[in-house]
Amino acid sequence: MADAEPSQSTLAAPKRTRNGCQTCKKRRKRCDEQHPICGSCNKLNLHCVYGMNIRWGTTRESFEIATMPQTGLGTGSKDALYELLKGLDITQRLHRLIDTTLDGEGRTILLKFLRTGYKQLANDIAANDAWLTTQFPMCEDSKACLLSMLAFQTAIDVDYDDVFDRYYDQALTQFTKEACSPKPIRPVSVFFAGLFMCTICLSRLMPYTNHLNAVIAMAKTWMDVQCPLAPPVLEFLSLLGYLDLQTHTVNRLTPKQYTWYTYCRGQQGIHTTSGLPYSLIDLLSASDTEDSEPALLLWTMPPGTMAQQHLWEATRLAGILFVRRSRQIAIMSYALLDPDVMISNGVIINSIFVSIQRCIDVVTEQSAQFKQALMFPLVTAAAFDHDLSIASKEFIRLTIGNLASERNHVLYKGILEAIEDFWQSDDISIESTAQRREVELCLL
Image (cartoon, rainbow, N blue to C red):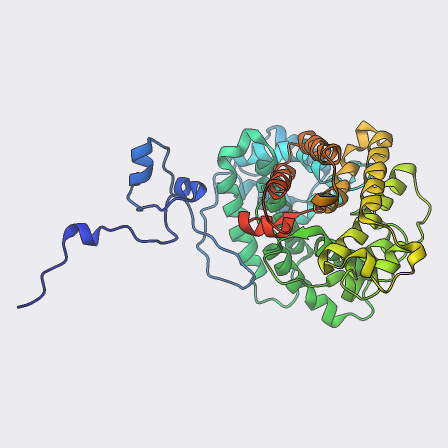
């Protein structure tokens, strides 16, 4: 006798796929994929939304194209954005790209980005408006660059939180398309878009090193054909190298590239993006070498402002703690150090706190973004929970909380949550806590 036909209930059994609704994905619940409302959302009376499924990893995986808005106002339409762009004296080519790509909502978001949002990208003690005339025009060569700016604004602006996923998907789709282009040399604007994708992910506590590795892979076309590297290329690689530092990512989900150590060492002066001396970043990039701790202990600080010197000192000391933590070697058994220069973890941690507090005290309100570089020494000190007093933990808690509130930064709030979780758990390190929480934390 032939086997009975499968019942209707068997055919309808939910399968674990990647096509569930966005609501279930955010809740990390299995979705039965019923349309237009899945069973889980219907049962809980939740807003059920199905979206695009786009993936971009360390390899060039397949992806589905998101629908991009094509209802622009037309070239020359005179709204507030038009007037602002007119003042920037951008090219007709960029005008056409904006008009044919963005709808009314997109134009409003771009206007807000060009008025205020771009200032969140400031990375030096003093910020000015040069970015609008030097960096924004890059968009004319890359639609991904333009769309990534919109995605960035929706990522940092609570007014657009409900549309972030859509704009991120559009930017990611276009960046993937341009990054996978068969052209051997890509426009600089494509690299710029990739850095924006990293920044967007950082601002939303999303994994970012997959995008970083993609940009580094593209940049290797420069590395392979230029020796020595031209100054603009070296400057860009230095930015990638700083983002790639092993000291500044907790629970990295992709392979380390060692970009700074391989290509960027030996420069003179202060690195513009980080505000740190090149010589100090050289030592951080070599944190897994045998003599890294003695080198950090003996590092000579260059001249700088009071705020800079306090930041540099906190960073140097945090580098020493990072080396010790990563090697899990007790200070009393560290044979490479002379007993006269041995410093206990507790002394180093207290010195870090003093430098951080002094830095905060002397940085003006206009230069508040300079303080964001303090995240690395704060988190590194937090990893030594057995050396921390109740007062020390409270100092870390309050300082990170203040940094987060100043910029409404989801990343810093996520870092603080991971630290609190680590302190209350039996995890052996913050890295273990981040692995358990399935997050990639950037300390930049």
